[in-house]
Length: 98
Image (cartoon, rainbow, N blue to C red; front, side):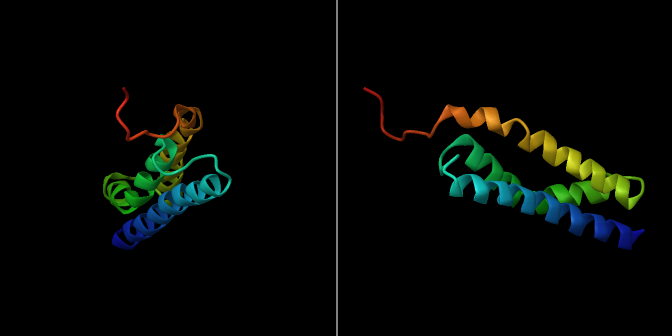
């Protein structure tokens, strides 16, 4: 049981972090998003929270390893899916408006 939870933690953490930061790297390289825009910050934060989310998945989940990893993938898809429309918001302008 403990070995299964450790495997779920490692795999779900890797899936969440690498997926988030891979999208971030590709989108930043193609100038789809830049630092300060909502998609950049969401993907960066999600990737950084990968270990925390992985811990919750491994502790709270019940079922087989495959079932748990499917739910981790669904969670990532639910977070990354809405980011494409959000990127139209634009960068945050730190200058005061006059």
